Amino acid sequence: MMPVIASDTLQLGLLAFPLLAAATLAAVVVLAPYRLCLLRGPRAAGLLAAVSYAMAFALISLIAGHPGQAGSGFWALVVVAWAIAWLSVEEMAGLKPRQPLWGRAIALAIPLTFGAWLLILWQVLVVGFAVPKVLLPPPSDIWVRLLASPEVLWADFRQTFLKGVLIGYALGCGAGFLVAILVDRVPFLRRGLLPIGNLVSALPIIGVAPIMVMWFGFDWPSKAAVVVIMTFFPMLVNTVTGLAAADRMQLDLMHTYAANYPQTLLKMRLPMAMPFVFNALKINSTLALIGAIVAEFFGTPIVGMGFRISTEVGRMNIDMVWASIAVAALAGSLFYGLVTLAERAVTFWHPSVRR
Image (cartoon, rainbow, N blue to C red; front, top):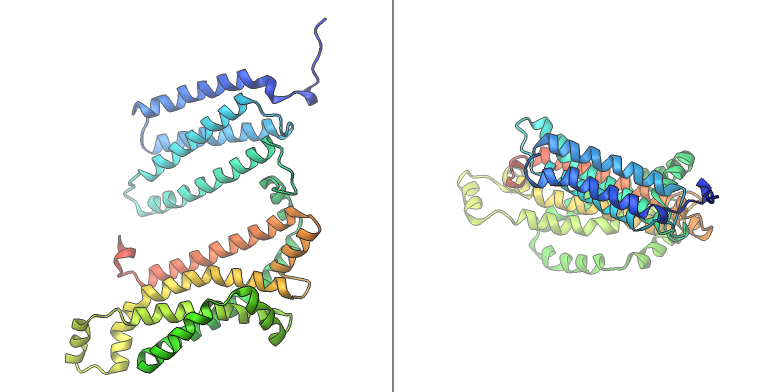
């Protein structure tokens, strides 16, 4: 009488040869026609993406009940699915749609597909190798935590981003922009202020943050003060460089039109400096969030992304830590994207935008 193997004790190692055969079949059926140029264009991109996602769903479902038990056939199937996804992104990148709407959709689909597959590989590798959750939880656990703690995450987001980051970002960038115009107008400030600015910008945040907490208290103003320090000098240096971008011929042309300093500044030099200004704004959009979160490690009310990360690490709630990191990453990415959209609207004339 043959022994019966219970389904809950089935190991993926027993499925090595069937999964290896499935990986080989998928490679032959999907990749061979593609490489032989029998399948190209939007249909190829869509088919490759659909097949890769279907294989990813099957792999995640297969490994979910058997962590740490994946065999060689399973990993062969993972490699084939990843290769198909890679080819789908490559095919999408080569498309040249005539309609702008389709072009924007493809430009958005490429990073989304790439990011989705990073999460898929993260899930498969962590579960497949049975990585302890205290070291690195799978994305599924982080997603569950995000859905289970919206009130806590929203309160942290409001404290850190809406108060500390945005207010400090506006004050730091605005002050840096105005001081840059003053430096441009008063030459001796360029020699005296810019070296000091470079010195202050090199100060470590872990040394500045405790001082700001002592000066402005434990609430969000101390975090905004740290953000001001971190964003002021990148804006100052970039704006000064942008204002000096006009060459001698352009300045002489404005002089022949009898333009004074304010007219030259508003009609020529500031527009030419906008790419440099937006470069500083994009750099500061990430620096501001990092500065506010790190500053919260040195004193804050019982709310905030930095407070949540430091507290939950001590409690070994790593899924909550990663949920806070995910919210911060999403907020920072969206903030950077909004600044980039504003840049495209303001500097539409620049070659980097028109191409």
